[in-house]
Image 1 (cartoon, each protein chain N blue to C red):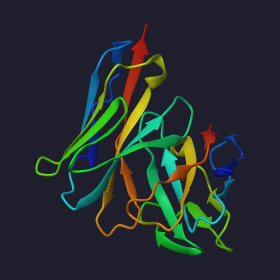
Image 2 (cartoon, rainbow over the protein chains, first blue to last red):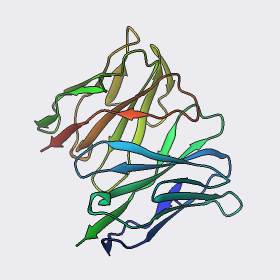
Image 3 (tube, rainbow over the protein chains, first blue to last red):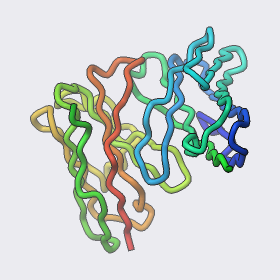
Image 4 (cartoon, rainbow over the protein chains, first blue to last red):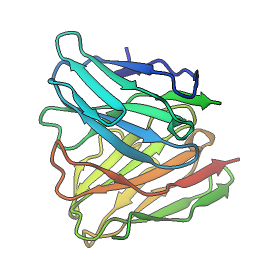
Length: 111
Length: 115
């Protein structure tokens, strides 16, 4: 079983749609959780951290369910510029800052 | 603030040849990481440095890969000899101290093709 699992997509959605990505992780000792965004042929960049209480940044909402070992990302009112690959990332407790990445979910927002 | 610098940006070599990549992290960042990203996959950590010491190299194929950060600033990653399956993007990242919640800042990567 992969340490971090994501649906690779692609998710093709019209502009203005709401889209949700899910991610599961296998190690219950995971401590920190993130969503990174990676544009085509570019480097990954931090989109947002994910907290147990849930957190929101504009059109983006991230949720964490530790009991189910499940992380989600919701994008509302999607824009063309949201087209990218979204990487689910976890960090083990006591593991320094060693990040484990999922394979990513590709999003294509269309007119 | 200047970002993470990497060179070269692209490299094409034949199998069994050697290749080296260079990374200069964000100024003042103590922690430096090398990742390998194969097409269609997420980045995989190869090695993590804290200043000039190795913190984690558990996923580095040590029979052919080596890395150093002698002065605790810039770093080189070498592959010798290269195999076809080493074709990937090699990403360097840095963070201030290596703490669990720290953001890692990635460089643009070196795209390697082994023929």
